Length: 281
Length: 172
Image (cartoon, each protein chain N blue to C red):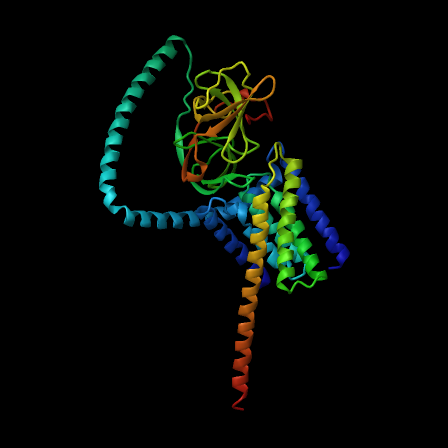
């Protein structure tokens, strides 16, 4: 191939890719999604194989090392299980009480507490283009599906390809969520910042915010339901003339995720969204 | 054959990337094995092979990244083409020049990614300068180490083949 043609091919490839990137925003559909899905599908099994073998090695090593502790741990876990069952019974009672009160007030509560487990096969929480790849199995995930861990909110599904799903972490710079401060009940928007922290915007200066206060989802963004733990206030500084500058420490330690939960159920019924509109924070 | 070698190298890079990310939390900040495969392919001096290697490896890396799809594809295509062009015009046999080519490739990739992120991403975050230096250094080191060991293996094989041929010829 002549040098001129090679140069032309090079320019065409670059221009084509620029169009590919530009076409994804704000709607990640089309050719980019197809190629992205293909890349995710082809890399997913590799990630899963590495994950499975490393977990196997780890559990074998753990098993050998902690054989003596297993009996004690088993006893402790049985006690914990009993305690959890007691709590569950109490919660059921409360749930029935709330149901009864809701009926009295003719308020229909939305049930979206069904959780589905998913395996984390690849996590890159440290680089500047953070991501998490999940193996969701046969039951497909859906776009914008909230992802939780035992400790709190992880993020939302942004891409599904076969049995794999890519998650936008809450700490991603492009991520945000509507939140509420548990004590003062003030609502704001939390967004990703540097690795390991979040920024809470739009809390007015006159609001009394304490360090250590819990931050929960507010259920106002159309993606995350109300009441999921997001983190705790790490620092409060006078920001602009109107709002505080609040740094939030995420509740989830992203470096220790091996399983997460996908929250089932649509938060906003599709019929309420106008055509082309999506509930993206 | 060369294409199969490239595909095998990409598969090996993917496996090592996943294993590295599991063992070391900052692995993806410090090393880009996909870029290393592109640089190793492009240093042979074929710009077409270099750019297509960059395209394939970059799009695979995009499949894992959290940014818009195509950022790594664009950057690695440009780097693959650039390294191949450099290899055509410069003598990249010496260790220092080879390290320079790999390091420049990694630095160029990060610069292109940062520029694209600024254009296409809201609240774009730029790579940490310290980790950028680490990535440049590891790419140069791994590239030189791989090339040196591949050359050593190739020359040993060549010597063995020549030695065997001599032995076969001697009795005659």
